[in-house]
Image 1 (cartoon, rainbow, N blue to C red):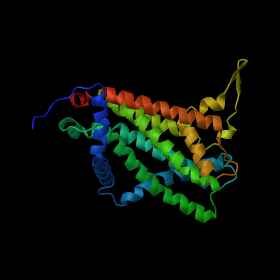
Image 2: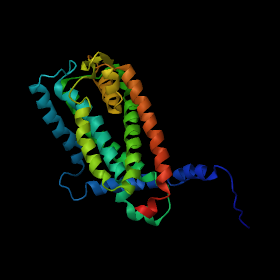
Image 3: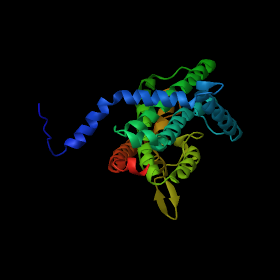
Length: 281
């Protein structure tokens, strides 16, 4: 039977999203491969997913106690680690998905598949690391006899928000890194700076709502909350710890809006540059 070529407006775009579903097994394959490669020939293997945030938590806990920073009425290790979990997930997922296309140059340049599969699978691997590290948070809660508040049921929503933020930024970085390889140095700096620009050690409620500067009133807390990680960390602490760890609702709305914009623009730019990946990579 003869086959006919049908030319229809928007058909290519719809076909792309159908291809994502057709290649769904590639998500699992790439994620599993990256997970095995990351911990291959390491003495402690998967435990590295736990060791990194735990060591960082210990250092920051000491810094918090020395500085006598408030911890929202909960043990300091719990306060710090509940913020380290989403931050570690976001920073790792952003970095890994950002470099995913370059790291899979051979695959991208040889066969066809929706390139979006590559950065998404990298974020999935980081999500697995996140759940492994979450085991230590459960251990900490048992150690301190701490019972999460009822709003813990909303925790998956903040995990989803962190996933979206990491993926959106990762799409931008992945597309830019194909064009500009030196962009990886900017990413390294952003990860280091981002830890201190996020409320890992401090409570957002301690940031003044209004900051007066040269007779001008600046909405400091709202501007600070434009960093989506701020709302994500606040959400984690509110749902896991409660007590004095409350949500700044305008800041959470700003985080949701920012993440939505990052995902939408990241998808747009990634799809726009995708046709050139095989030639430039």
